[in-house]
Image (cartoon, rainbow, N blue to C red; front, top):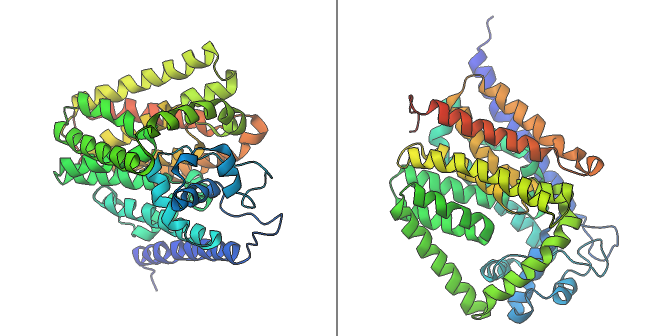
Length: 396
């Protein structure tokens, strides 16, 4: 009797990913159900207390205390290990307004819903990238399981982070660009301003790429978000946010420097915050990579949407001042671009997943290996696309 390999392979691609997702979901539910906020060793949610606390402040209407260290510490009491400490909330007011809805729930259920929402955001991003992934002929759930196996995303989704949301917004912008809806694509990119350092990086690329209607969409979205924050917190919110974010920057190097993967952040951690050498190395190398990305956008203003935004996403990760390793998950866009274009895709995918786990050595090394690996992967992608896209066009 012969075996139908294609049927056997198809069965494994359906069953194994489903089993993995079920196991992860069961582990999440177990952690939520056994969580005891009053027990000193029971902790849940990674960085989620900062968002939950900001949402609680917003829900109470105490906008003048949104960036207050004392108020954030009070709202996070019992949610983190550091008694009297707090996880700093460094996002614009409209983000706190969104989290005020989740803050109406008990912490454990709020965290559970947030984790489910981030998982769905990742799944939705994969579905939006379907035209570029269809060559693999893998079920969406298999692709989702592989994405979750990528260490930054595995830690981000249950860690209270929002990397999956960034991926969803970029995937939406790519798909809307493909579907010739530039204004809506710009609105999706404007929503990236929930992390201002991410949303702003896109603007120069839209200009050099002559994507004027996309830029109009971005500007419209940016105005809506600015006005929303102003209505919530008042006209001085931007100055208050900037003052607090600037003060937090040096503290963040001490607290999270080992987790930085961006070029400026990595060298700040390695050579010292505020040093001339850290500035020159970090921003100098970021400028070199940015130049390559700008060149690609200039050469391909209308075509190769996935590749353009994959490079833009890489620029966001590498050039932002203090990108944490979670957001290296955005580099999956580059992997999707390579996945669609290169042979031996399975080998590439497995290698990238394995290498992503190198971050577990960060505490022992004092720096994240995922930083140099991310730079190398982004540099290779920029070189390969620039060298090869002049001839064969595989953009759908």
